[in-house]
Image 1 (cartoon, one colour):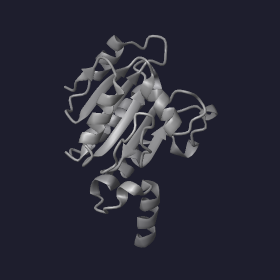
Image 2 (cartoon, rainbow, N blue to C red; image 1 turned 180 degrees about the horizontal axis):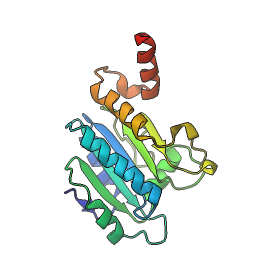
Image 3 (cartoon, one colour; image 1 turned 45 degrees about the horizontal axis):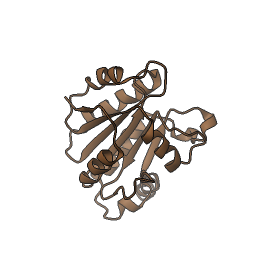
Image 4 (tube, helix red, strand yellow; image 1 turned 60 degrees about the vertical axis):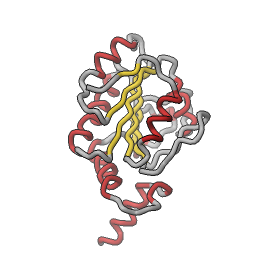
Length: 189
């Protein structure tokens, strides 16, 4: 079973994120009572079941967004994960959500129900700014200005993850995964 940290500290997330820089990292920010978030959480778990690779690391940040979101509920939900590659946090103050709303340029102040992929070698350099993901998906309302083309879809998220896991290009960390996939598909056809 994975460990749920009772108190979210940004420096803990940054340390763990950077210490796994040789891995593909999946980061999800979800509410423990939001039905859509729980579907997204299941997609993350499914991804880790599908790709049994030590090159894959996960960070799930449980965030207090709805009435009933509390540490006990987050802990209960977190107990369904039995994968040591996934680390979980409880973020009562929404610090991660505020930080990612800025990084993803969302209209509202807190990002949640989001699912991000980071390529190897990407480092988190500043507590003031989360790193740009290589790819991300969401289940956000349209008024938040998140592109509806990137609504969470397991098949697409898994395809992007698989590509990163199989990629051997040294400059991949600096490139948009979607563009790399499009370039590869053009070369195949």
